[in-house]
Amino acid sequence: MAQRILDALRQPIFLQEHELVVTTSIGIALVPQDGRDPDTLLKNADRAMYAAKESGRNRFQFFDPSMASRLQERFALEAGMRRGLAHGAFHVHFQPQIDARTHIILGMEALLRWDDPEMGSISPTKFIPVAEETGLIVPLGEFVFHEALSFNKRLQAEGLPPIRVAVNLSSAQMLDPQLLEHIERCIILTGADPHYLEVEVTESVLLEGSGQALAALHRMKELGITLALDDFGTGYSSLSYLHQYPFDILKIDQSFVQALSHPSQGRNLATAIIAMGKSLGMELVAEGVEHLDQANFLLARGCHKAQGFLYGHPMSPEDFRAFYWERMGGEPVG
Ligand code: C2E
Ligand code: CA
Ligand code: CA
Image 1 (cartoon, protein in one colour):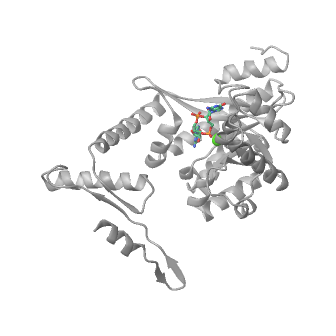
Image 2 (tube, helix red, strand yellow):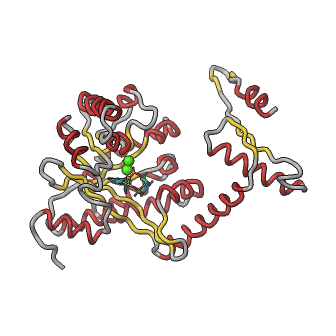
Image 3 (tube, rainbow, N blue to C red):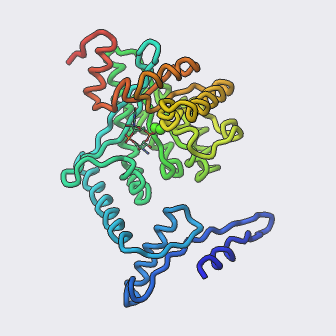
């Protein structure tokens, strides 16, 4: 029955000259195992529907009891994030991007960290999706921009060679009509030069946002911000995509870099991605470089900008500052 409903609703609808497609997600709760009263049944059917949406939409999903505990975990995360924002439990760490030939620092990526007094340290892969759903990503994103720009400004004021700082943007942020205003405000507040700011988005952002995301990217570009396509190769990018969007940098996804340690399978893909990026005139950054053999392979193919544990883990601002000074053969002052 559920499948028949999905099939029936999947038929395109023609509205004037537009062809519209509706996707459906169905959650199913059964009597008596999933509840004996209408309230419980509807609530559990609703949870099953969210699970159907999460696993890719356009499908049906039966309720199972583990969904209830997942929902509770989400609530705990949301409440924890609100507390954390008010009490300074969020921090931004910085991971260096280096020239694998000379080990000179070329840039850094800002990565959000959250240490909750009760739940401990929580991974951004876990809390960012909840922050997106609850809208908390907006104040969190503003916090990251502010921290990243002011830290970079401080390094420059100390006399270190200026580098760009890269900030990650999720789909919810790209669809926020006030995003550009926030960024511009942070630039003014910190006195940072937008030429030293880079923004990283993934391919999924482009698919979900389409027109709106493209407009936001163009406005950032006008401000002088550098644009990087993150996790490249994991989504559905085609060459036509790359042409359509104003990216300067392709970040080769970690999975391809890690596959370099298993010859045959991974090597051809990485080689092809590098060749493609180069022929399109893009700058390339390899992510997740952990071993020397990976770095050497990338170098031999002409990709010399690298980021990964081999060169430096994400660090607190203080540690990054010391790391940078040490590379420059000096001592931080103050
Ligand atoms: P990402 O943008 O792809 O960031 C790279 C991730 O790879 C980071 O994980 C980093 O710690 C990790 N990494 C770096 N080098 C290596 C390596 O050599 N080996 C391995 N195995 N991992 C490495 P992290 O910090 O846990 O962040 C996970 C994801 O969370 C990020 O993936 C990004 O999508 C998201 N994220 C982090 N901070 C922010 C933020 O401020 N805003 C938004 N919207 N998303 C963020
Ligand atoms: Ca990134
Ligand atoms: Ca990435």
